[in-house]
Amino acid sequence: MTNSDPGLPTGAPGEPIATDVVIVGAGPAGLFQVFELGLLGIKSHVVDTLGHPGGQCAELYPDKPIYDIPGLPVCGAQELVDRLLEQIKPFGAEFHYGQEVVGLEQKGEAGFVLETSAGTRFATRAVVIAAGLGSFQPRRLGIEGADAFEGRQVHYRVRHAGDFHGKRLVIFGGGDSALDWVVDLTGKARSIVHVHRRPEFRAAPASVARMRELVAQDRMTYVQGIAAGLRTLDGRLTGVTVKRADGSMEEFEADHVLAFFGLHPKLGPVANWGIELEKKALRVDTAKFQTSVPGIYAIGDINTYPGKKKLILSGFHEAALAAFAIAERLNPAKKVHLQYTTTSPIMQRRLGVTD
Image (tube, rainbow, N blue to C red):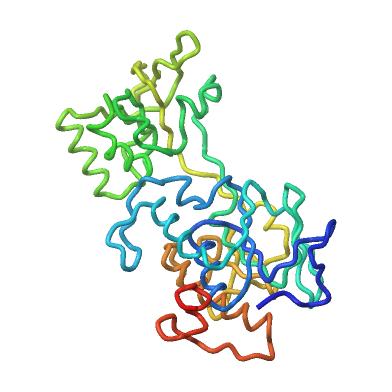
C-alpha cells in the first residue's frame, strides 16, 4: 500500500516526505506498530526524541529483565528492543532520531503535515502516537553543585550496570527503580548506602523486604534522611553529606550517586493538537485506538480507556488493532481481511520468508 493521494505532497525537494503513517515514538509499542502496519503493506516513518530506538524501556532500564513478554520467559529490555528491530527489518521503516514532533497541521481528507524540531516535514494520511509517558525529565537531586557532575558521577538512570561494579555508591529514592538497583548492585558494588527520606516506600514489598534482609546481613547500609551536600576534591565527587531524620549530619564516601526520585512526564506539543485528554493521557476508543481526532491514533502508555493496563503486551495488542483501523482509513472502499502469517502467502512475501 503506497501513498497515492494527489492531495499530499510527493516528497520532492522542499516538500514534505510523503508516507502512509508517521509513528511518534520508537519504544516497544512503536516498533511493533511498524510490524503490524508492514504486514498490511503499509509504509511508515518513525520519529523519536531520543538518539536511539527503544524509548523509555531502553533508556531507563536496559539491563533489567522482563518476565511478561509472551513466549519469552525472561528478556532484557535492550534485548527486547533488539528483537523487535530484527522483526521489523523486512518493512524498511525509516527512523528519524533526536527529533521531537513540534507541529501538526490537518489537511482535511488529505491527512496531516507534521514538522519536527529538526525541520523535517512529513505529509501523512495517519499518525500513531506511541510516545510512552511523553517527554520526560528526571527529578533532580536538588543540592548545590550536583549538576556539574551529572552524567559523570551523579546519575538519574542506569545505562550500563557494569559501570558501577566495584564502586562506592550512594543511592537515593524509595520507589521501584531505587530498590531494584539497591538489590541488584549489592555484592557487585564495593559499598552501597541507600538513603530515603521516610520509613514508607513506594516500591514493591518484596524489594523492600529484600533490602532489609541485606541490611540485616550487613551487606549494605540504609539511612533515613535526605541529601544535604556533596564532598569534592580536585574536581571530582568524593562523598555525600546526608541529613538524617533526627537532624544529625553524616558523611558517606561515594564514587557515584544514583538518584531515583521519579520523572516529570509531559505530553509536550501533543497536548496542543486538540486531542481529548484525561489525566494527561490521550483518550482512545478500544476498537480502533483512535483519538478524538480522526486519523490520529494512540497506543502504549500515552493512551487511556476503561480498564487500561500500562503493560508492554497491552501496547502490542493496541498496535494490532490500530493497524487494521489505519488500513481501513487508507482504503475505505477495500475490505481488510484478517490473514495469518502461518498460512498467508501475501504476508509471508512481505516478511521475506517466501519468494
